[in-house]
Length: 419
Image 1 (cartoon, rainbow, N blue to C red):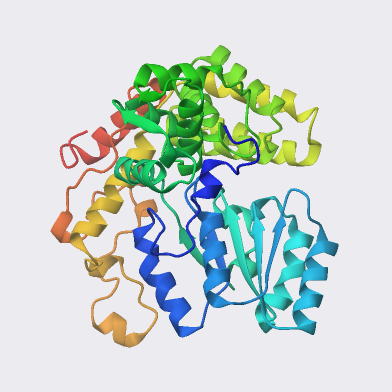
Image 2: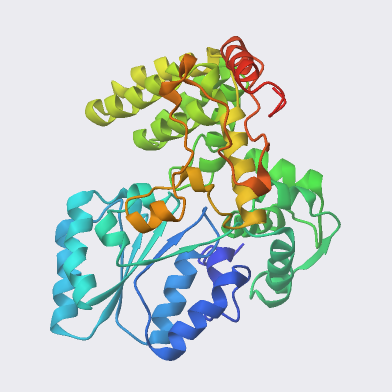
């Protein structure tokens, strides 16, 4: 091992879009922007190790503009203003902010004027949904590009490049016998994949190195990692956390909660995931779950660590012990698929708004029956477009509360929807 060598992932960092592996859906857009000289401010959203920092560096190199980089973990408003002032005094500059979701409102607001007036081109990188974490005013001034996890083919291409072109690994005799463990353990993260490749090769003292699944697994297990604050274990832990709650195991759920808390995970990130789960995995089996999750989200924002851990624990245990149903989640998925397949079907005339005489003369709203004028506040009528009438999108879950909903729907609609 060369003690002074940069990590493999850094040594292989591409210098151009053509050299970059993966993110094919963005290369054309970015290439056109660079050729035209009209690079917009960007938010790069995607999981760790998929090329967000690489794209920022490539844009800076090819645009030939001054390039500044800040980390939202350590930078403050003063740092942002210093960069903006330098850009005002010189040429338009690119400012790359890693983990921009960690900037608070005042820090993000400090960027607004400079972005709007064109002093800086902002490139923000985030693993979090920018709709939640980036101020709407700043978000409206940026293009949001979504990056994808690298595919198996992408990772194998990286492996081939590493063994053939890297100045260190190309000098070693390496035989690839199995790649399953490398692919599985990296989870589409190029940095994690290359780090694991490098560790596996460096751990062998043989002149001829063989990479097998057993060898890779052994090396990976030696690496101590309670929780990587920068994201390497981030998605594994949150996945286990969500699946434990969904699987009604409060013990496992609290364990993974503790892993995140001890690792310094953002309290809002944890609370937000529980808020989504309360609707996606519990839904109408227990509507109170959404209320409790929302209250927990609000409470931890006010309280903060360390006491927020108690609120999180209470909410986790409640959600894990609750009845489960994904019926609402499945219903909207099916509905969106129907919309994509059938397009913009006309709304039945009787359901249309009729604010003008012309619309009334055309039959808008004619024949509409007001439900509250009928017994039980219900009248059987057709609400769906005629092309898809009778389509059932909501299938109640098998739990006491949704069984009641199913029976009510069956009594009201008879056999129309098959309840």
